[in-house]
Structures are given as structure tokens and as C-alpha cells.
Length: 486
Image (cartoon, rainbow, N blue to C red; front, top):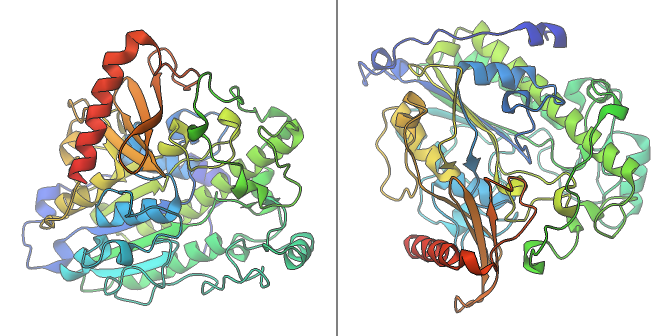
């Protein structure tokens, strides 16, 4: 596989000239006239990208895709934890108190009998492939939905005593030794091995995907090719060359590292258990050592650039095989991630950093280089893909296709979108985010409200101010109505 250099990738602007979508669907009896789908999901990716206005991040290939598609600036996941978020997105169902509740969610168990996206496409004549982390449990989920055995670079060996094969993917002697001698199998929270891209799982995933594109070109069926990248999930492991993209002394720390004023204890995880699993991370909040914080952010940035390079390799091959013009591309995170904001280094919260995630879609017949601030949520992806592919929408879907918003990014859109984690339920409108925590009998025991017009970083909870009583009641009713529909 020939890799293009980083500088060359930066120079690729590439507004792909898409053929009219109607012509693609003129004869539904011919499989090749159906658009292909390249579905890319990235673990823990927040909108820290050049195309989202983040100047410090080097992400030329995702930026290139944004220039060819529609970028959603206000897109939110349903659950800020990987297994549950992916299960919700791929089934098109909202989470509840008993469905899609944790990182270990098994979609087929929580939503039995539901055709997830790949199965629906397979039933409609598509050849479906899963590379990397698509569902959280690729070996358990999506039964009957894949045309080939789901593939992962390590065969999903997940024993703590086998760190080189487990999901943390350490390569350096230091981290391998730490992992072998620590009960939880975790070494440091970062790694910068001087290795080629393919040495880590995500580089191998890109290589596998490129090989798939070569053979899929001559298939008599359209394809649904799902690609799941693990980084920038902890630990922040990436080849050294991507760490070298950044000057350490220029990396900025979060400017709001304290708990929001007036925020309830319910808004914060009990501790920083995810990051505390790693060697050398102190068990207190916030992390007071600026050098540790800067190293963590540096590692996150390096991982983003590493994944961006893998996406560039895939996009280049898609063009090389003359598949680009007839392929829908979806790129999304599964949720966000705190990088020190509100004293946190995790997801699992109802704050903006945890719930907001990037979403970019490029499709034949849709003008590229557009942005929309219309509120969208991840359960909308399933019906949108069906409409773009001219497939029937399954009856169980709870989201709404946003194809019309892609065609007209200024169109008035949803008034509110909904997310949840644990016993907390959250609603986001254009101006506000309101969250409430309830007991099993729906009695409210904590709440918070942020005005994004005056407080976009959610630093002051105004839910208990007397003048906001009517707003709180309005949003509480919206949440109850959403519960009743889920």
C-alpha cells in the first residue's frame, strides 16, 4: 500500500464532484446503482478538529472530508459511553433506564429482534463488512448483519495478563512490563512508540480497509463498509511521529478546570476511575500537576492526528478505486471526552464536552463544504442513511432523517435533542441545556441548567435561581414526554 506523506495530505483540497443522486437510484434493480456506504466511527473523538475551528489540532484528512460533505456543529450522542452509544446509534433506538446503559452494553441483548443498520442494509442487497471497533462487542453483536466475519486486529484477546494482545495495545517494554505486573493490566496513560502506523491496531485497521476496497470495487453488490477506530480512547498510544506534530510548550490546558458553580454532586462521576486505572495518575480531582495534564492532552492530540492519517489513507484508496462519487461517507465520534474541563478526564457526564461529538456526512447529490447548526442526535443517522440509500425505514426507528437539513443547512430543525447517563436525563435546545437526576419513582433529586448564550462552557448552574423556575418546569416536562416515547 502506497502511503501519501503528511504534507501531501494537507495539500489535498478535493471537492469531489458528486453525480446527481437521482441518477444513482434510477434503476433499483441494479445493485451497482445503489450508493455504497463507508461508515467510520471513532472512539472518544470530540470536535477537537480543524474543521470545527480548533487551530491546535492537525486533522487535514477529516477537514478534507468536511470540505466534501456536510458538517454538523451541534450533534449529540444519546449516551456518553461507547457500548451504549454505539448500540443506540446502530439500532436507531433511544436509551432507557434498562436499555443501553453502560460501556458493556450488548445491543442484541438489550434490543432483541431489532435489525441494526448493517443487517437492514444486508437484507437490501448490500455486502456488509465490520473492521475494528464498530459495535462494542463485535463478536456478540450484529448477529446476521455481516456478510463476513467481523474483523479486529487482535482477534479481541482481552485478558489483563496478555497486554500486547488486549485492547490497550501497548508496544513499549516499559508499558508491557507495567501492565504485566499490575492487576488491572494498565500501564501508563500514554505511549509514543517509534513504530510504523500498522504496529498499532488502528493502522492495521486502515490497511485491512484499503485491501477491502480493492476487492469490493469489482463486486456485483454495493457495500456497507464499517470501520471503527479505537483512538483517541485511553491510553493515548500513537506512533511517535504524531506526537512530534505538536510543540509541547504550545499545548493549552483547559481554562475551566473547576467544578461548575452550583453544580450538584450528581453531575460528576464518583471519581476519575477510567483514567485512575493508569500508572501515575493521582486519585484526586482536578489533576493539579500541569505537566501531567499537558502530557495527557498532547497524547490525545497525537492520537487524533494518527487516526486522521488513517482516514486519509482510506479516502485516498476510495478515490483511487473510482468509488468516491458513488459512496456515502459517515464519520462520527461515539461521544465526547473531557480534557480537564470541570476537573474531569472522562466521558460519563451530562456536560457538553461529554455529549457533543463530531458528525460529518458526504453523500452523492449533496453539496459539499456546508455546515449546519441544526440540532441533531445520533439516532437520526439510521433513518438518514436509509433515505440517502433509497431504502425503506424500519418501523422501530425513533430518530428523524436529516436529509432535508443536508440539502438546506439553514432550515429550521429540531427544537430539542435528548441524552442520558445513569439516572441523569438531559435536554439540549438551541440556547439551553437542562439536566435532572431522578429516583426510580421519577422524583427529582438534583438538576442543572446552563444558558449557552451567556455561558457556552457551562460554568454556572442557574437551575435554582427563582427567575428560572418556569424554564426548569418547561424542560422537565420535555424530558418526561421524551421518557414516555422511549
